[in-house]
Amino acid sequence: MSSRWKNAWKAVPGINCGLCGRGICSGFIRAFLSNLSDIDSCPLYSLPQYKDARENIISLKESKLPITGHPAPPVSDRGILFTKPCKDTDEKVMAELRLSNGVQPGKTLNYMVFSPELLCSALEVLSNYFQSIKCSKDLGYARADYEDMSITFLNDGRINMRRVNDEHQVQDLYNIIRFALLGSMVCNCCGSDMYSILTGKMVPIKETTHTILNADLLVKLDASADILKITGKSKLINSMNSLGSRIDKIHSHLKVALFSFAIPDDLTEIRSLISEVEGISMELAKTQRSDSEAAQLICALMLMHFSKIALQSLEWLKKSDIKLRKEIVENYLMSSEDALDNIPLESIEVYAHSCGINRAISLMELWLSQ
Image 1: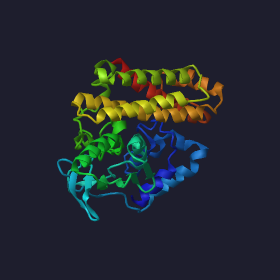
Image 2: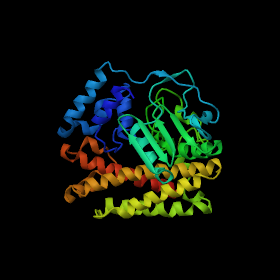
Image 3: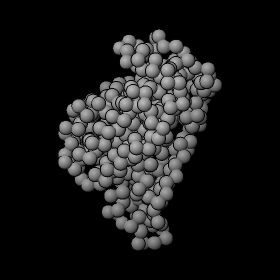
Image 4: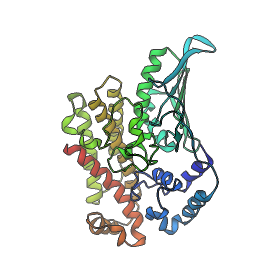
């Protein structure tokens, strides 16, 4: 990863509220450093506590440190470039896999294939498949181990497997891995991650459609990326009903916590439900699915991604003044007007966290209503 991007992660507010018009903070930073967004699009940078971060990110933009800008490498039809025997034993194989974010070989990659912090988050979903996982957001590098097998992940899209039993296991692992990592892939035209794009709220900037939707995925996604309108609870097959019931419960818990101001001291139940949805989704993804069924599983993982962001904001709001929280919800969050034009400066951070929670609630409501 270039020094410019590496240093940029340290200057983000990290609330991932979406007030800037991007799904999460890293999408905003990529857009800002690529001259696709203005610093004042993020209202948090106007707060005194983010003054140093604001100055750092502006300085990074003005620096001559390189970003990506190298040509996209070739990718095979199956995403597996080669498999061959391990050097130390013919009984095991090694493989190089490569995920593409839809950029044609030889064309310029404006960003890395994976968003580093989302790569680490995605690998947490795979934790049941490995004995240990280590991931560095700063380096954009991760490693997963199981017995004598090891898999390394690089944010340029490469996945290297060592000491795997056979080529069938390579293919099976690859199918699960790329399903889990799909949400962490970055669109070359706008710098947004796949999960943010799948909300239907991200507009393509340099292309007529998001380049990431042309990636070699397990499922063909609708070109409009409005996945919430083509999947939903009413369309779930019987084997997926447990997903719908759990997502319904998560939605109810978040809604009560935000709008009834009843944030539980212990958020374990919500956290457990999120983990269950992710686990069920990955187990269902192991078997061959139709495009519509696979899209539903991807949608479920996307909803959990934003639910985890909401959970972090709930943890933060528990420590804030309840009177201020009530004022924010009643006077600004539930208002049809643009609250940022009127909201007091000292209330913006509470408003940002509340918006992050409300986004997860709204996305789930849309999905549940389909």
